Image (spheres, protein in one colour):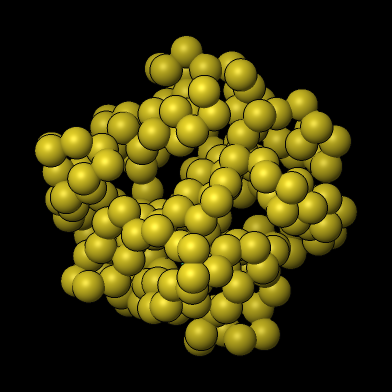
Length: 189
Ligand code: GLN
């Protein structure tokens, strides 16, 4: 099994470190053809407008969308989640890959200094609460049919799953807890 990490911008290295800890072969995805060599893809956090802009200018956008629609397993976090969402409430004209049936609001918890850590119960990961790091995170305000909600914070979904896509509004690569990456990998085995 080989996992790609979209390596355009954002917290790429941190995901790589986790995959190496788990002994998983990985590759940094920088071009459309890199998508042909992988069994799953991580879309890291960063800045969603920059990610979309670079995906378009480097001609990866359409191919990535097609791959995800055809079932490529994806773990998306924060900005990586924003670029998948069907609707962005406060930036209705922002482009997205339009593959995940959610509506979200960007930067919904405020600025960088309003970033926070909280401990979330996530039943599918076991009894131990999960240390979740939120950095200028989006808030999921609506989920469509077929979207499972694995965790919520203050009544908003923060970990969702629809078909081949996992979406988190927080950063699992910034903690030592490997359970989310393991859950993602377990979907491919
Ligand atoms: N605020 C960023 C955005 O709107 C996301 C932040 C993150 O990925 N940590 O794209």
